[in-house]
Length: 471
Image (cartoon, rainbow, N blue to C red):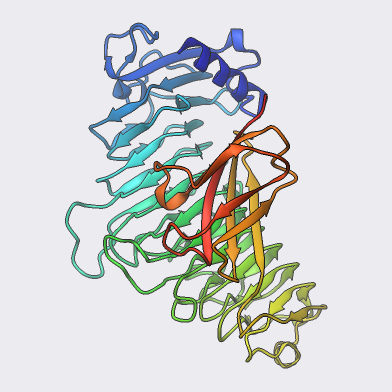
């Protein structure tokens, strides 16, 4: 066990967790276990219980990494408040030991500053998997699922979110799998708010699927929302929660009752099994006019009544995206005072669906820029599209989304920036994250064969985690 912990500490220090400590020998480490005791001394031989460290902050100082051994930590929600204090330079990191299943039951409520939550499984019953109310909070590579009440609430009552909160500076939500949360269309994978008083919120490289409501739901009635960097997320099958199947909501919603501003929506992808019957795939702006300073680039947006709806816009740049929806495509509405020359669509690709006419659309909207209509097959995309994101905190972890539009039973995945000859790899479908791999072995080059027919939504679509190790 000592060797595993030391290896993890070295990886954290090398790959960006610089706030933990400048060098391994200077770092402060505590150890927590399900059998830990309140009077433990925080060593491997005498670990603390989770509540003593997370809630009461016993022995926890700025710069501490608290390692959680595998097992179930019952008794949540656990609330980290004033007793736990990190700083921007020395955050407090609560991190699961790699290779062990570490489940926190009942959710986490974080109001403490500069706390990192890393690698945990966070499972209900709970009203929220993670209540994000602390400045400098980071939630990294967690598995957040099945957070909701035991009984279905009355119709029209919100119940649970995977992650909810915001309106604190320097928050980041990175690399998480968030699924099966909530009961109704008011319950989402992520329900977030941020305003101009805070630094931009970072929502990066998450996989959001089969939650009761939306995938990413950035919304507010009172606050004027501002400052979101949304990048590298895979959002699919919204509202297809097995606990209570609903009509497809939006995979991504960014907007509220008041104008939204300072949005970066970059290199995300979406899909839905009810391609024609789900609501708009991505909604930026929602209802009010005056939405401004919006950048939408390098995304792969599919399905919905429209793949993208950009509403009430004053100015925006939309470039290098791929769009497809079975009947609509992209809808744009403008603020009354908008100068349409400040809304630029450039170098986008529209996949032909048999009804969308880009020249007519450009004439009606008046947006500038050069875009292309490319043929598909029978009104749908054709071929293979691979979406891959290498994890910034754990480079041996890679998120994949595979669009197998031709419905082949197996496809060859080519990842020259990820795999090289001799790498050991293991691939799991996110629908069965703790189950057996769908592919594994030693790479013979930069690619491997992925069978697509074992899980729902295959062969057309699948989302996966690839774990890679290299001598």
